[in-house]
Length: 366
Image (cartoon, rainbow, N blue to C red; front, side, top):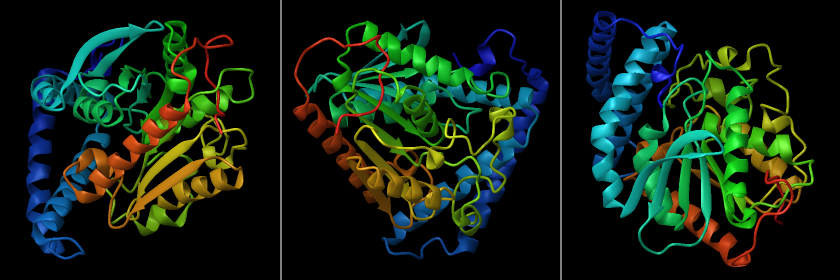
């Protein structure tokens, strides 16, 4: 369930929420007025493409800046409205991909299943959603998860994770671990299992791998990361240099999630981790995102560790662009490459077999 519906999570009154929504609409209107002032038609793509990308960038940046400036109970109320809206908007988009959607529970963690009706590959994806470790819900990712299921032929399970500040680290890691173990306990072959995440969900994937990599657990099929948050120190030059081009707010929040954890710890920042023994990994990023330098550094570390890795950087693209502008050529190229990566790994994996060990995956698979 979205965080606003969890027991004990505070929400604002409806009059306050309505006022906040009115303020959001007003801010979004102002952001759209700003678009033509930023020469949105310029760039390497066609004029319609450039204008659409610039409008998306401005609108999402405004939404994120406004919503994260609110007190947490007001933020939760707006999030609740958006989740309800997605319950209406997303199902037709899911059906367009010829994917079946259902609610479920794995390892005691509730979530959403997306299963392709055609061209099934026999793989399974555990998808950990982004949102800065503080927001969004699996339902908000329905269209993207449906596309991911169609592109890869895999069944996709998106667990409903506990989020900060009500549940700081390591609550989400505990939920992700329980869901991962549950998939394997239910008979999923670890060699046909992929850990996938975007933004903070990508960072959580790296935390999950870190937590299990040095244990005698079974090898998994691979990892796919979209603009992963792999450096919570936020000390790379691109955080400043790309602040005006990305969708993220310039003051990216992390304190509520870390709750006193050292942001340089390899538990939460994969750029400081020893990546020896990692699974095959696909990493997507845009050249205009604030996390660009950290993701590049992470990719370099994967290569230095001898990991079978693909790092796909798209010029002129911002944070998690495959999710926000799925119609763009950059997003299509990325998703086609992700589908090819996953299917190639599945072709190399045995077609059957049960998981070994205690059912918690680690890295490996090279």
